[in-house]
Image (cartoon, rainbow, N blue to C red):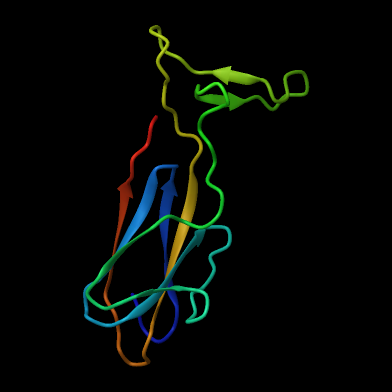
Length: 134
């Protein structure tokens, strides 16, 4: 993916506690940048993170990721109706445990470019789970 022009790939949706592990496997140095899918910022030598050839880095995406718990520690969705705007909808099973649903995700974009012109890089990307109390 890394060559003399910045290239990018959509990483899909991530939640809190997830990060991106980027490995360079062709032995050439690169710059990388992970941003929201809305921004899709192209990496340059001045705005990206340096990744030495043959190494790996774990990146927590830039920007605020949505919280999936409220101040009471419970998972919730906020209603968006005129009568109930801002009221929480609690999602609990019969035992009081949380029910996980497809929410609080944001899509991300990875951009990569060579550090040195003509020294094409090879990039391997993985989504990894970090410690998460939920």
